[in-house]
Length: 152
Image (cartoon, rainbow, N blue to C red; front, side):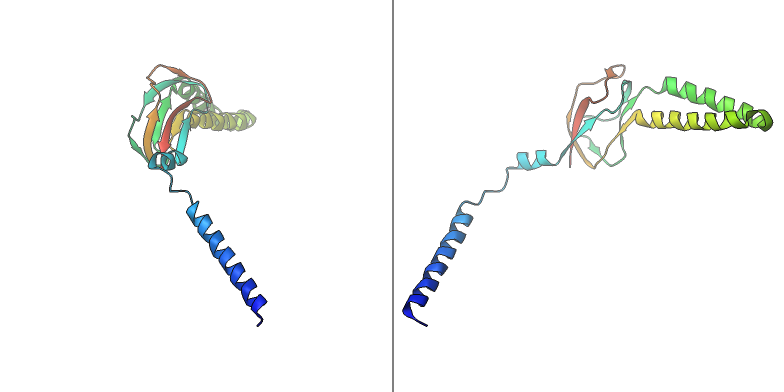
């Protein structure tokens, strides 16, 4: 190998090592705990309009997936559900007359149950409630309102 080839290899090696050193020297320090903490924060957002019936959590509470966080008022829908169930029982008693009506009522009952489920705001993740708006029973919430934050 010639002197020029050896010098070129040595120069490239030095340049490579210098580049590695500069990359390592500019390496960012780990994020402070508070920033890393916020990166794993999940907002609690109300998906439907409703009046608060019960707040099931407090700031610093530990929550698990599926835990109830806020219960919105279900009284109107529960009444509607009972009426629909009564009508179903009535038409089941006389299947000859009520077969078509039953299909509609069962669909209505499914929709009511879906709406009832939406009135219970549950935790989407496990973690700790790190922020919670000052909310109380009887207060009206609008869809899209962020009421708290869960940190993983």
